[in-house]
Length: 332
Image (cartoon, rainbow, N blue to C red; front, side):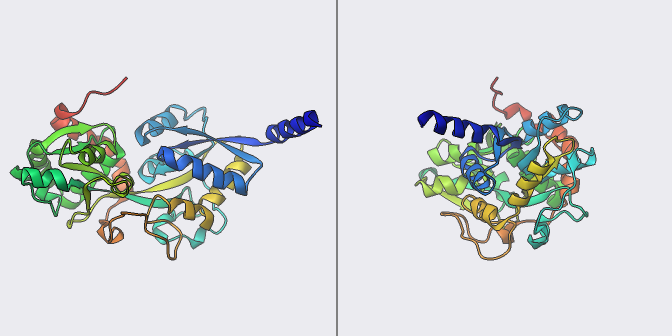
């Protein structure tokens, strides 16, 4: 009897179709998202390949002629715009796609991508250390160039962190060429540029530095755990991107990939996204995650995501030329 049960289990497992999903989601998101999808589709299993957004993009580009991913789920839309321009995405209109908020829908028919949620750059401010050092809370990005913050700021390197690029891209789009004057002043105050988007907020949370430019993913989690930080949404608006889903052209598992794309726009999937993110693609009332800053959606600046994607190489190259000297060493 035991042998029969074991054989039955093995048969069930072997009958599952495995799809390879490239993602830049945080590690703690992978388990819940995978479980929710596989509950809805017990015949399909997800095999994740997770890395930072930049590395995922580089890997996909390197595999252009021999794709190994079936789907990308939780990758910045700016990166998907670049892939679409190269003809690397398989257009597909998921079931009930039209229900999503307009910002999260590709205007083309059929769409090349679908949005999941929005994430943005913001300021983590250690209130305890600031009081000790008599440092005021900044209200705007422009404030960060003031001499009072000298040596007190860390931020992600935009050439290696998409979080860093969201901030730099926003400054360039909102300030024009004056952005370089602002970043010159900011650079005087920066102690370190990190290669991780979450690290600056973690450093602010421990009090190593007073200010960390980071994301609305990391900061509420740290604050909810008791970190002595205020989460500041600058009054001069902030940069953002959409986490999105797309099918990779050339997948040999198209039906399974379409099933995941269908799930990714569903209410059930958005309920999962909302456990980590406040602004999700599905309309209606959703909970605000614990310690999440109020007014986040109103703080999102107007920006051109296509221009953001296509201008990335030139903008980051100029940034590296000017400021890379304060970047932390890259780990092997």
